Every structure is written in C-alpha cells, then in structure tokens.
Length: 301
Image (cartoon, rainbow, N blue to C red; front, side, top):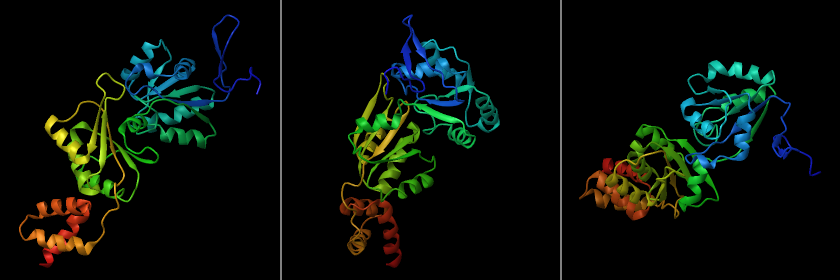
C-alpha cells in the first residue's frame, strides 16, 4: 500500500503542519469508547471522531460534557438512553441516511457493553448504514487483566439480577462452565451476591475490582469466602465494581452415595444449614447440590 493512502478516518499532516482528517462520504454511526475513570485514557482517534461528528449521542449529557470540555470538543450533545431510545431512534436513522455523521458514546467505557445502543446498531445494519468503532477502555477487560484469574477464556454476564432467587438461577446456569466468570454488581448487593455465588458455585478463587483507573482503585483477591468475610467486616465498597469468579479448581465430586452417607451422619447432630455447609466444604460440592440432596435424605428418614 502506498504510504500516502489513507483508510477511513486516517489523518496526515498538511502543508501548514496541522492535522488533516479525511471525512468518510458514507453516512456513518461511530461507536466511540470513552474512559472508565481516568479522563487521560481517551485515544486521539476518539477525540478526533467526536470533534468531526455532526452530533454525539450519550447517556447523560452532564457526565459526557465533562469529558468533552476537557478536550475542547464543541460538538452538539444529545441524550440517548433506555427511556427515550425507542422514540428518537427513527429520527437518528433518518439523519444518518441524509448524510449526518453521528458518534455514540456511553457514560464510561465501550458503548453497548451493558449500555444502550444495540438496537440502534441493528437498525443501522438493517438500513444499510455503515457502523464503525473507535476501540478503547472497557471495565471487564481491565478488571480481568489485573485479577490474577485465568484470562484465556471467560464468560461475561453483565449485571446480575437484583433478587436472590434470580441471581442464584443465573449462577446455576454457569456451574458447568470451566472458565472465568465476570459480572458487574452493585456495591450494596455485593455480600448477598457472594453468598449466592458460594451456595451455587462452591468456594472458588475470585476477585473484586472497583474504581478502576481512578485514584482509589482497589483489587481484592482470594476465595469467595475470603471476599465475603472481608466485605462483611469492611462494609459495602464505594464506586462501581466488577466481580470475577475463577473456574472450578478441581473436578466436582459427584459421588452421590458418598454424599448421602455423609449427610445421614451429619443430620443426626446438626441443623440442615450446618449439615449442608459441612458436607459442601468436605466434599467440594456446591451447596446448591448438597442442599437438594440433604432435603431428600432428611425427608426419607
């Protein structure tokens, strides 16, 4: 390829020494990643795309305006979030079809990752409107990199359900996955979430990352029970956080005969709750499985 050939969005120095940017003639929606905490983490291409756009769509104009002000970006901001998306999406498509270049950003990180934008992208594709992306930060990858957990394969589950029953169901659906599990979670629900994870998945290696790239960045590592004990003592953490749970450290013991023998012995002198806890820790079987079997054993005696 000739050195002077430019791809879409490439830049070169003009005769006056200033950066010249080629503008794509095709109507274009550009997904631009923004910093997850430290405003210095924005890329040159992200700044350029935002400056060149006719409009920037964002979740909260108050949040995004701070970023744009820092980098002297004067492009018009418009709100695009789950409450108004359905209403304004047709107009956005019409604007794109008539030649507008529009950037979509989220409050932090990569658009669409647990943020609005998926249906807009789908509508663009259906209407033959080109969609491109300026890559950048995302909390789940940043957290995984520093977690100390296996990064070769992972499952990202977004935000977990707020209710315990639904959360346990989500964990149980992943119990057979031999990979690192990554979730976003609310600080106020963290201890309940850890208890559900222990009950459903067993006591695995895990990590909690919060306030990533910010002044008070904090990574707590250990087993799920270590983390549960820590946060019960220290109280709910502040700031946004990522919960990561490692794969099973060993093959789950599925010898139901051995489990039932142990359960019958334990139930003679212990409550159901203590029996489940002891049997799970002894045999390395998730408490959800032990609990179901304990009910059967108890009712049969």
